[in-house]
Length: 471
Image (cartoon, rainbow, N blue to C red; front, side):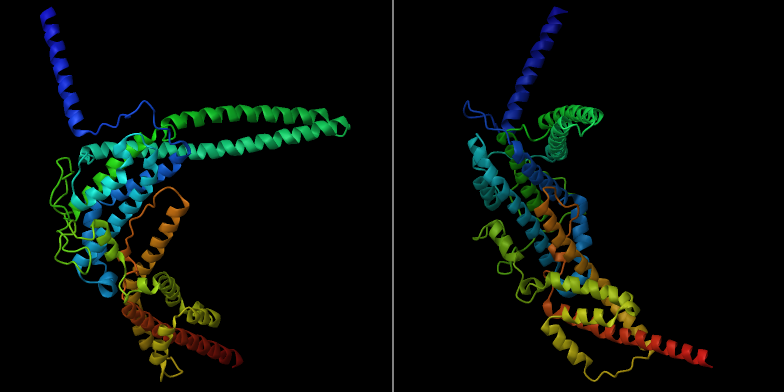
């Protein structure tokens, strides 16, 4: 029995040694290089939680489900093919470029935090990230496997949730403490008035009890804040949080290259569980001037090539700065077309004032020679059908443009990530300006006829009603 126990101990010891060797060979060692410990992130935890939230959102956008939807739905929108592009390779390249640019901006936000790290590799995160983007070499084995990334994301979600709770409870504590100061000041004022025999003792006693109750609540609230600081990012060191972010960012970039077929050399730990239905064939280009080049080895660098592709061509609404304006214009016209009988003269004039000069010119040319009467019901029905078809493919792009812009404003005002995955290719940003204006002009011509038809029908109905009453 003693021999068997001894053999078990030896087996366990050997097994533990192998585990340590295995772990040390795959996981970077982020132990401090000096006796000085890196400081806690403290109040920067809220900014870091925002970065983690955006990173989670970015990673989820690369899931098999979302990539399948991108390939089969997003780039197949009728409006996208009509006024953006019908080249699926180009549209997929746009999607890849936007996702990659979002990751680059996130990494740029992480870089200033790295200077507070103790470990030299973490302080060099920005340089290592750019090298990995251009060469594909992961010198420090920072890329995680899919299983490791899933576990890491669950931990990140808990930290983000706890940090959001901490932010809310700290705000509540601040409100309580402000209320306590006001209550104390009010009590002191009442005590001074009591000296002048103008305040009853009972009122002062009630105010004192209120202060005691509030002090007790503040004590409990401080305990809650202290607990959340321990469980959230607040008390984590810069080395800890940057190591989490760095490895997740490296893995996300590796996932982007895998999904879009941009990498030819994969580190051994790169997640490979991409389903066949979600696989995107390798992209031939990341910019219009390098269609036959390998995007990971272009002389301009990986991220520079992405930036070139995201720059809208001169023929697009994005280059003209009209994408958001036209989106709002289309939404207004959509409402008017659905209820033309409710459109007054002032609303019609307001709509006309929103039109750029180019659209006004084309509209005047189309309306030249049009009669003053609009009493043909069959023609009005045809216009309704035609406008419905145009709005059927144009309205989704306009709505996506507004949603995309509002999400960017939300990101600036809040540290949490948006909840949707609207991409620029699904908006009016890359839409051809001439094609868009032609469709808008067609809608305006149709709206003009429908508006006049409704007014004439209403006038005729009133005239008939008046004649009936008079008779």
